[in-house]
Length: 610
Image 1 (tube, rainbow, N blue to C red):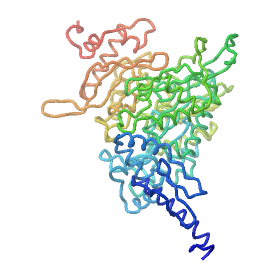
Image 2 (image 1 turned 60 degrees about the vertical axis):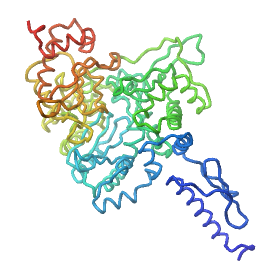
Image 3 (image 1 turned 90 degrees about the vertical axis):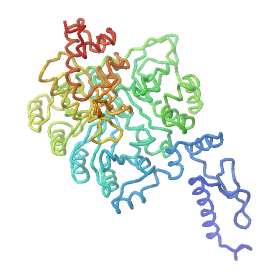
Image 4 (image 1 turned 90 degrees about the horizontal axis):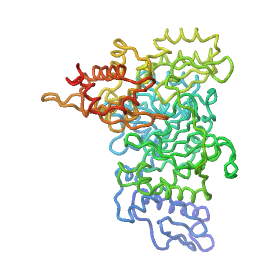
């Protein structure tokens, strides 16, 4: 007995921690916490308004913001979505031991665990494939040759032997068996590749200008900003508690479009000239803040009128994420993206909340004239292009429907080491760049690329061809997008030659991972009735665009079988070539014509046969 108590100080300390730990565990399980006063002799346990207990003299651990947001929903009589309930019952980042045990048993996750595993970058993609897909993270799309060599090895030892490039300037490994999932995550981490937060309700891979730092046309380098924000998010546990996924992009004004206007947060570089009436905005480069992009829901990010200095991007993004975390919808997954909070509140209220978080006002452009980013070059992600470094160029590789074998990955890594700087760049157009090649070495590198079965120059169709995974690897997809896209490219290349780039986007479902609504021609997988059967096919939309030709495509046809698509697209392109005006792009041409006229051309109806 010590000081009249039955426990020594060390025993008292242990029991205090045990009591607090029990309280936290009960909260996680949705159970009521201990109430009233209880504790060790001479001590008081206090229960706060959120149910977080504290022993006198020991401050209560604050309730995590996502759980506090859930508490508010429940207190108001709301019902959490099943995903929110799953996160509440099991903190997703604390599942490593359970994941390892599942791997030892050769089992995949079941029920809502399938969702929770995605927080670590592992996606169980049954029934499309009885395996995992692992989505990686490369902020700004930059990786090293040694990392690519590691990925070539791991996609063979742990996956199907190939890598898929994505529309977030990222890579995926597929066909991963149950017993190899956590081991793959461990090896990736040892190589400096962190998949954590690449899926589920997290900030996804942060994109930036693919030619940042080497582009003679850019206004500002962006890859360092993407990396800084990426590390902030990875190291801030609270930021894994969002209501839904979240996309962020930096556009620095380079040749290759970053599609920042399709993101929840788009930072677009602009130049401010000196102006006597605006001493608060000195001349220089700023980022114009746009919010709420989600083209699968028919919305581009909209300008807020706010201008942000480069060093402000991280704190502003953090504040936006925290406002979204606190007020985003946690009852209806279909309404849980940032767009819907902006629709509900309006921009003024949302920005006021952000400013409250920051503790200061944001600068508005007002009527100030801004120098915009130059229009992107729609060919700049493929082929040879000069850098701002004298005597150096980059080569954009053409990867058939974004796929790369392990053998090709190894050879590309060796090329980057031998002829470049050991660095590689991924783009949002599902391809890869080898930068920093001496101009005199270009012919050798081009020959090496062709020798490995790839190409460095593309037809106008292949240069703008985008395809998601499709039903060969995604349970949501209705059609085999990658196979259909590859066949369409070969079909058109054999029959016609285009002198302008054409963007054709194949996406397998309504989630629109391939962003079909911004393509010149967009194709969304669907089932089509054919006699007594339902066969694979596509909804066809037309006239989308991005950057200076921004626009959401209009529906041309609701359902066309996969077999009919090649001839239909051929007729559309022939109609365009015959009737376009001088210098008119396909999207401009499409918007100039009524849908009925375009439909007649696509179906070759009698009105246009003559």
